Length: 330
Length: 238
Image (cartoon, rainbow over all chains, first blue to last red; front, side):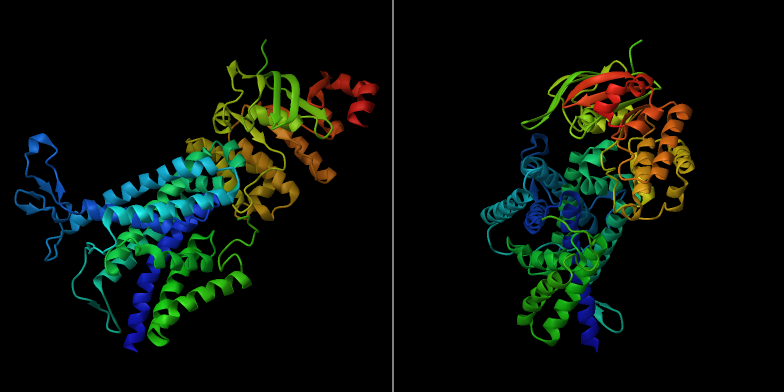
C-alpha cells in the first residue's frame, strides 16, 4: 500500500511538470492557434542557459574588478553586518537565494527568447497557412537541439536543485524534497496563469485576441503585442518546467525534453488543447498513470499505454476532456 | 463648418478586386447619416476603411481635423470611433460581461466604466439578465444588442453601425432603432449607419448616401431621398 501512495505522489509531481509544459502549449495554442512543437526544445535550451549562469562566471572582462574575480550566483552569500541575507544551504555550497536569483534571471531570459522567436520567426508566417507556422516551430525544434549539442555536448550535466535533503515522511508515504518543491512551484504557477487569464484585463485581452483578432483590434487591443506576450509567457513557463525536470532526471542533456514533450502533448490533448484547467488535470492524470503503469505493469508499457490513450481520446473526443466543443481549423 | 468626419475620394481594394472606386462622404457632428445600396456596393468597406480594419489605396479620412486614414484599428478606437462590424463579431465563448469589459479596454477610469456599464444595461435590460451567460448562447437580437453595448463601452463620439437589422424580427429591429435614436439624441453620439433596409434607415437618418459599385450614386437629405420616386425605385427597392 505504501508503494501505491508513493507512486501516486511521485506521479502527481512528475505529472505537474507535464502539466506545466502542457500549459505552455495551451498558452500558445490559445493565443495563436499554433501547436508549438519547439516548446520542449525552447525549455531545454533556456534550462541550459540557467546551467551556464549558475557556473562560476568570470568577471575578468570588467577591468576594475581585477583579473581573478569570479561570480558564482549559486553560492552567493550576501551578509549585512554579519547577518546572512540568504536562506539555508546544502553541503555543495548552494544557497537558496543564489538558486532563486539564477531561476529569476533564467526565466527572464526565456521570456525575452520567446518574444524574439515570435517576432522574428513566427510573425512572418502569420496570416498565411497555419501549417507554415507549425513547420517553422519544427525548424526551431531542430535548430535548438543541434545548437545545444554543439555548444554543450551530448553528455548529461548535473543540475542544481534547491532542496536535496532527506525525503519528507507523510506517514502513508515518503516524498523527496525536490518532488514536493516541484509540485508546489507547479501549483503556484498554474494558479497564477488561471488568475492572469480570468481576472486581469491583459489576460482578457490575450483571450480576445486569440478568439477574434479583428474584433479585438476594434476594442483597441494591439493583437500583435498579445501574440508576442503569449509566446514570451509560454517560454517562461516551459523554462520553469525544464529547471525542475532536469534535477529530477539524470541532469540536463540536449535530449532532456524529448520524452517529456510527448507526455506534455499527451496531457494537453487529454485535457483539451484550448483549456488551461485541462492541461493541469491532463498533466497530473498522465503523470500518475505513467507511474502506475511503470510500477504494476512494466516500464516498457508506459509509452505504449500513454500514446494509445492519446489516439483513443482523439477518436472519441477530439477536443479533449475540457476543450471547447467548437470545431477548430488546424 | 467642417464636418466631424470627412471621407475624401477614398479608393480601396481587396487584392485585385476593387471595392471602392471613389467615395466621398461628410458626417456632421451629432447627426445620423446612412449609407444605402445593394450588396457589394462598398458600404461595409467604407466603414472598414474609417475604423482602420482596412487601408485605403488612395484618398483621405479626416476625423475632427485629424487624418486617420491608414492608421491601425486599435489606434483609431482611441480617437473615440467605435465600429459595430458586419456579422456583429462578438466574442462567442466569453461571457456578456467580459464582452462589455473588452469594450472598455482602452479606458482606465473605473468609475466612468461602471457608469457606462449601468447605462448600457439601461438601454438593453436583457444583457443585464444574461451578464454571466456565454455570448454565443444569446439570440440574434441579443447578440446585436451586445455588439452595440460593447461599442458604447468605448464611449465613442462617432459610432459606425453595419447592418444592425440583419436577420432580426421586425419587432426587434424597431427596438434597436429606437435605441440608436436615443444614443444619438441623449448621448450626443454621431452615427454613420449602413443598412440594406432603406425604409427603416431613412426613418432615423437626416442625410443619406446611396452607393453603387464603389461610387456614390446619389446623396441628399433623408426627406428628399424618400420623396424622389426614381431614387426609391431604382436604388432603394421599395
